[in-house]
Image 1 (cartoon, rainbow, N blue to C red):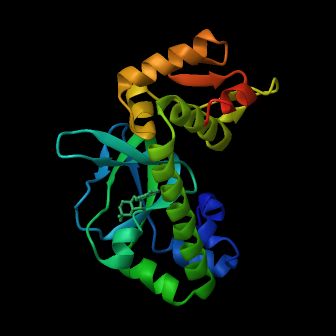
Image 2: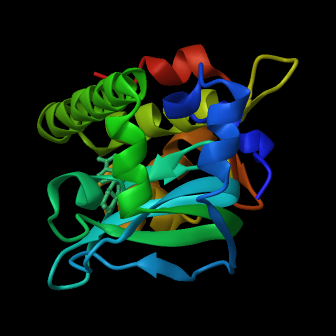
Amino acid sequence: MRSPPVLAQVPLFTGLAEAELEALASSLRRRSYAKGEVIFHQEDPGSACYIVETGRVKIVAASADGKQVVLALLGPGDLFGEMALLDGEPRSADAVVVEACQLLTLQRDDFLAFLRSNCDASLKLMAALARRLRRTDEFLQDAVFLDVSGRLAKALLDLGEGQGQKMPDGSLVTPRLTQGELAALVGATRESINKWLGYYRDRGLVRYEGGRVTIRKPQELRRYIY
Ligand code: CMP
């Protein structure tokens, strides 16, 4: 495969020379996935990592009684499935398609050979894992210190600022998410998300239409994070 343009967006591969990108691209395979398809399950053995070329993927952990928490929402340029390749343990979470996507896969041996021959990329990977641990620490603190209204306000602002769109009037629009997905992202029930979305809507802070939340007054919504 010729080097796909999305590789330039993968932080791990920035700074690679054209020849190195071409060499890496020759090990990649492309596959399309439909919405709702499970890419792998928690506890599966891991033999490859994935780069999102188009579409969106969620990383989900589930309890024995079927409750879910969304650990991450990923889009173009994001790499996932690397943890099982690094520590040889099974998959730490499910990966599920949110919006039909095209993924590039890199087999374990090729991924590890790439890291061994590229010290800078290994350092970038460590930085990415450190960032993830920081986010996980923050998530844990929020779960203990914030109530659902604060966690929802924070999640909406993070989604709007991260993967969403900033509109000319200063409002933020999140990617499309069901209330169930929002609940799993915030660590709350769908009913309480519905209640607090209604609370924020009644105060003119948000609008929920077509699965997207428009944050009309980001500064005011931020005040609810305490
Ligand atoms: P792996 O354990 O192989 O399979 C599940 C993948 O989800 C994991 O690798 C990571 O790539 C990704 N993942 C797990 N936990 C998180 C998290 N907290 N934030 C972002 N991605 C994660």
